[in-house]
Image 1 (cartoon, rainbow, N blue to C red):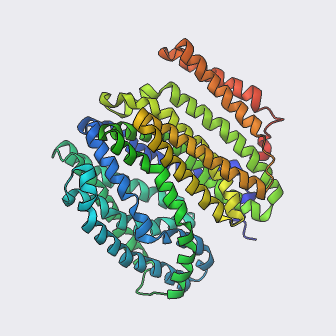
Image 2 (image 1 turned 60 degrees about the vertical axis):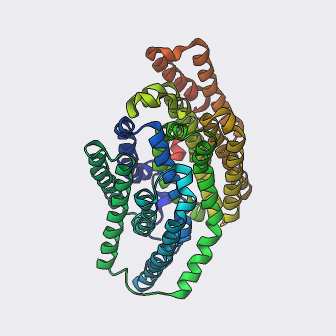
Image 3 (image 1 turned 135 degrees about the vertical axis):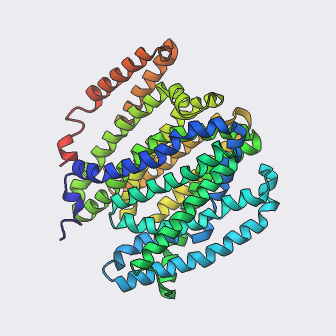
Length: 486
């Protein structure tokens, strides 16, 4: 077997660091830069302005479902079957690219034509240029996403990092001057998004033309095969959209656009946790899949131990975000958004759960039980939407934050239940709960004695928590680090 493909046998720590550092760098420089420039955006945009912008982007995030029918996921799946045959790979890519271009254009045109009947009433903004600038980029993004998938599946992590960072810089180069010097307000950010999407589309189109993968070739059988794979996954992505962004629409409808703006800022800062989650799980996913195929029993031990280790690390980082949420808002946003600090640790906790959900989802994918993920996504979506409709009118946007965390917990437990059913992972849920209660106990003490008012005590409690977690839960008899990183 090709050792380069037998990735699970490599040192796990070394593999995570080798590839994870690039994903971490990409996340820090792309998502991180976007978070850092929040300070600038919030100085020029009021919470109400930001609420309009975020709600508009939320609606735009629904379009990719209909533009591409998620054929990009099919391309990622069948890429490895055809990568050894350039003719077949060219036919696959060209077929999907052409279909998405034509079908997606029709969807965007119909959406723009009908938008004045449903968007303008909600946001009180004109169709042109606001809605044009918001609803056209998803088509360019979906076509460009095919290129991004090609780079990732080819393990071209450095190239992926360069492209993603470049896209962020293009966005800032267009948006910030229009915001600061031209005073374009919301339009500045929309123009930045439009320029980024168009640039990536042009780059990838030229890239694939030059490399001979994009031609006027259309294979109907490949399209049917791809649609057969992607369409059944539609409930997953639709459910993720409902669970992930419907909260903005509910807040806008039952509260105010200003509340949407505050929620959006708190959510974005809390999303700092995603940088750690994504960098690690993008590496552990392929390693786990490779190991389950070739050396299942050893890999199952590593899955269990890595999951428990990651649980503690992510909770500790989440604890730090709780302690310093006030400072995080002061760094990343204007003082008019300071109320958003309340939801930062709540949103961050959802990414603690998300890191576990990704680990267990790999086991589900190994057994090809996509119905588990689909049904779990539907349950998550319905639960989130129901909780938001019930509690947001009474408790405001903070209820939406709790709804996000609760539904992620439900989804994670659903995925874990079936993953453990398919493969006995020998996890001790008691230990996970025990670690969680230790962290919650520290939070309770800090709130009772108001130690969070003094930065010295906050730092001291962080150190104490780390010591307690290690002594009580991460001794050698609980986690064999040599086994994890072997």
